[in-house]
Image (tube, rainbow, N blue to C red):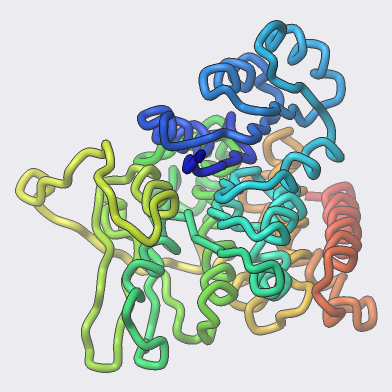
Length: 392
């Protein structure tokens, strides 16, 4: 009898995927790896697929398939490429699936895994932002389980274990403040993508690190908090915590605050989701409070980070506004990385896209289905691109 857990890692070559692989590789006798998927890094994908003896490795770009096949030659591991192959890999029977594909592209693969009854470890926050009601309903319908992997939402999830949600008064999501937390506001207009992609605490990819500097990453997390836990938007707070040691706090009606505290290492949240409902030892650095000395907190200024204000508007509007917000954000981020717009302009592009979409007669209130989300995503990207072409 094979009692190994069948697992798949969607987005295996990114920072979350690599941290997941680090944990899996420490106990290979416990797991059967079904599928690994990745973006453009064929060498890393093939290396990990061979090391973990995966059934299939899938690369996003069709043009990379010959290179993947060559890298896997003689291993017996199936090689595939493209969107259809990614969806097929996500649908393969598995007990636990890591959803770590960046952006809206991760929505459908995660949905397919949930439909198969897998426990979905969700690091792709865009899934909940774009289609939170659909994700929750799919988990219920498919007998799957949603487990949060963002450090903030994992912290909230852990603080709520054994608690009555009706006793919760507030949820406090912490933010590092990113690369520009101490910059004068007038200097942000001159900020470069390279400067924005240097995080003071976390080691992450370019896009998510720039999103941290603009607080769009935190804005997505606020929306995800509302969708994942069913919390009223007015109960969700944000504070800047430069040390990144407290990942989130839950406040209860007796005045108590439950905090999740630990070193900034994503293996905390990944390991909790991997072993849930058990809590097992993890190879992470232990926090020395004496060495740390102090922890500090600052208000999250919406003048510096207007993405936070836009997130609150999205939470109040609901419907497809999250899908519009995310698509416009991804498009504006592309514009900044490519040097077409300034750092502060990203928030302006997103706000204008939301305004245009809201004026299109009922689309924002349409039912949250996969087709409707895809349609809203497409239109929002068009709007954002037009806005960037219209001027700075």
